[in-house]
Image (cartoon, rainbow, N blue to C red):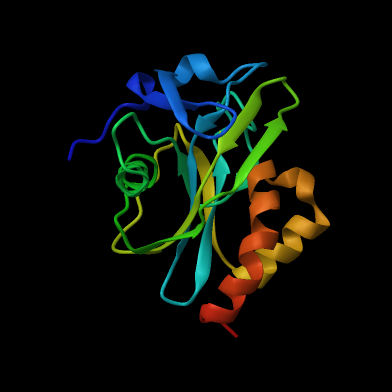
Length: 186
C-alpha cells in the first residue's frame, strides 16, 4: 500500500445520524463551520505499557503545539477504518502497528480551537502496539514522549488546556479499562 499525501485526502461526510452522505477534500472541510465527518484516534503502546503522546507541529492549522494522543486521521471513501489507522500511522509516525483494537466505537465530539477552526467528528478510538521503529514526520509533530497512562491522565486533569480536546474527552472513557489491562511500569 502506498502512503497517501494528506493534501490529496478526501474525508467522509456524515449526516446527523452518522450515515455517510458524501465526501470532500480534507483541506476544505476544517473551518469555522466544519461539517460532521468521520475520523479516528489511535493510542499506541510500547512493550512496557507506556502510551505514545505527541505534540502537534507548531505549523498545524488547528491546535498547534498541544499534546495529543499518538495519532489521528480520517478514513477515505471506501477505505476501512482499520486500513486508515494503519495508513496514517505509517504517514505520520513512520511506524507499523500490531494488536489494533477498537475501544470506543461511538466516540464523537465537537470542539472549537482558539482560532475558530471547528472539529466535528464521529471518531472511533483505537489502541495498538508499536511494531518496530518510529520516524515522526516534522510537519505533523514537533515532539513525542512515552508516558505511563496514569501520568498522562493526571496531566490532563491538572492542565487540560495543554492537550487536545479530543484527548481530554477520550481519556476518561479509555482510562479505567486500559489501566487495568496494560502493564504499568513501576
